[in-house]
Length: 163
Image 1 (tube, rainbow, N blue to C red):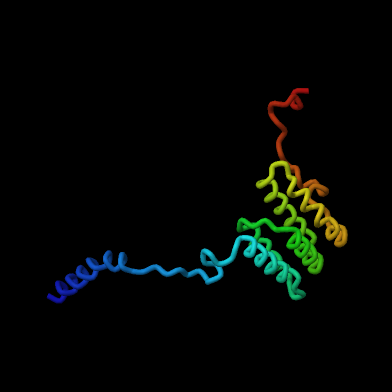
Image 2: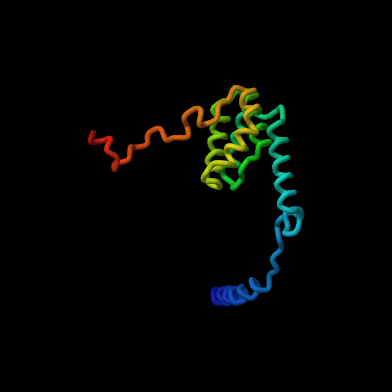
């Protein structure tokens, strides 16, 4: 008898679930400044750039934080501008991590190759950050030979194999 009452109660509650789901209101969980109509795209880019630049110019930054910021750029659809690249290069110099700086430039070069096949945007960025690179003694990926794959196979259609 008690089992019958229990099943009837469960069945009654299950019948009302679809109605409750339809009647439930959905509220936005985004903060006010990220709501549609909050900031313009340019204002949002400037705020993001300032946020990253301030974090990179912090004297307490360490390698772990630098990798986290690099992963934020690599994981998202962000393309760092010249100010962020210069701040990242200087932060890498402060923590003595040359490889991390080159890796960041390599990733940035790859992102620019996606948006611009002729690499004009990458060349313009390199011209902007060249003084900072020379100041810290860092090379761009092309100067290190990272623009070409190291272990790529030769083209099988070429006559190099049959010479």
